[in-house]
Length: 152
Ligand code: SF4
Image 1 (tube, rainbow, N blue to C red):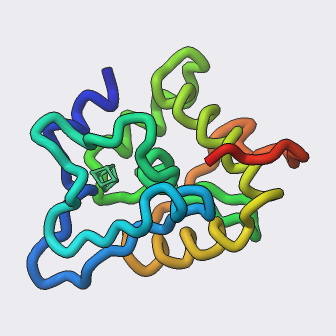
Image 2: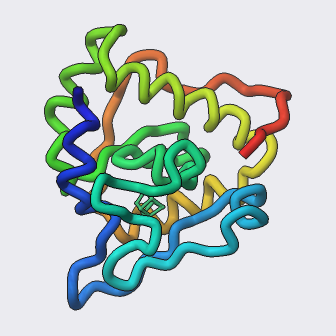
């Protein structure tokens, strides 16, 4: 499975020596639940088998290795993630894990565009400064506007 690699890699949950610490951007709801998450070297929530928060991990972590610019409704991929080529190739298969990930984050992005646009703007601004973002053009990626309240 594509994302099985993440539990071993853990690169995105660690900050290399010499790099500035990384504040994970949190939605309004996540701030209430988690307070803050700042990675100086290794995320406090990272266990031997991956993130200990499971499905409660911040949306920014679920979105990664993608990044999303809400102003232009463009998706990007962090070129430092070793999964980039296989992820992008897999998007042509609607039943792939990459397509399922893209669909899942697109649904949440659509809700956040309505309920927490400031979060999306801040998340993209941080991603831009921190990651090596490459623009990607997946099919049917632009989240549709939603009037539903996000439950994040
Ligand atoms: S919250 Fe979980 S997924 Fe996010 S950086 Fe920390 S360990 Fe990684």
